[in-house]
Image (cartoon, rainbow, N blue to C red; front, side, top):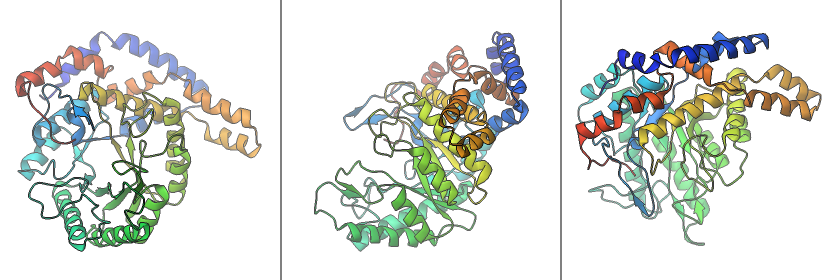
Length: 426
């Protein structure tokens, strides 16, 4: 289904008057406090977050997966679902494909469909964390780090193949996440595993196009629970530096030990010009992949405060790749993604309200109380009217969830696809 402008206008009709009143009040208050509301609206409107192709079906756990009716079973249907999200939110202007789950059968058809929905192709993601059908070698004991040269060469070739697929689509980045590691002490030689991974990544890097990035993800545990080869941002940064200037660290919010200071990690990587991308989710215990902002919204705001500072003060760092990486185990996937997009925009908008000059002055004066007041003053502002206005200005829905339900989009998808469809992915 392609949402038409009239659908959005009808959904907005009964909300527009109240929205305008709320926006006018907030805009007047912000203007009095020295904020340029139009600049903020422009930045919110330009901010686009990629939707991963694997997130458009029901998520799952190690113990099971409960399907959701009307799931997309083809890449084309997944792109159509991203089109629904983008039409409603005007924030989901890209899709990130995971290979081999979503290899296009007809590149021209897929590209034309995406273009018609104003969707671009973000980073392509390789998959060496599970064995693929008809693969000669197994990744049971690792991929790029494996002691077997044959296994490493297979994993390297897969990444090179993914790059070629991305080139055909217009992608500009390769994301590499490894499940490589060990479950028991003594299983691996740490140095050998790291050296093998480094050599493998450097081989892949040789095939990275000049205008591309290689994004190296890290994770402290899971699926291996004793050691992970690329366990933290330091290991990722070392590997990126070894590969070259087109290689960067990718930060996933769920890929940290409890209470890690993610905003500090983001800040230092940005300072060093090595922050390449961001995967958004939320967690209570570990890599829970929960809806963005559903558990730790203030932590998300603090991260965005550092991102906003970095974007303004670190020209040595490139534009970032933004993507949601969540698993909506019991929610309608599209509703969950809408909620995540809303939370991201809210954190970004609040970070844009931080008076960075005043904060810097308070920091120099060691005025700890004032520093906290400045941050919490921005955080406590209800910025929803700003986000709504940015959407409306681009032709989006004032309330995307409300519009989604009023248009009865899930039932439309069920009628079109059936009740027993299963999306590819985890």
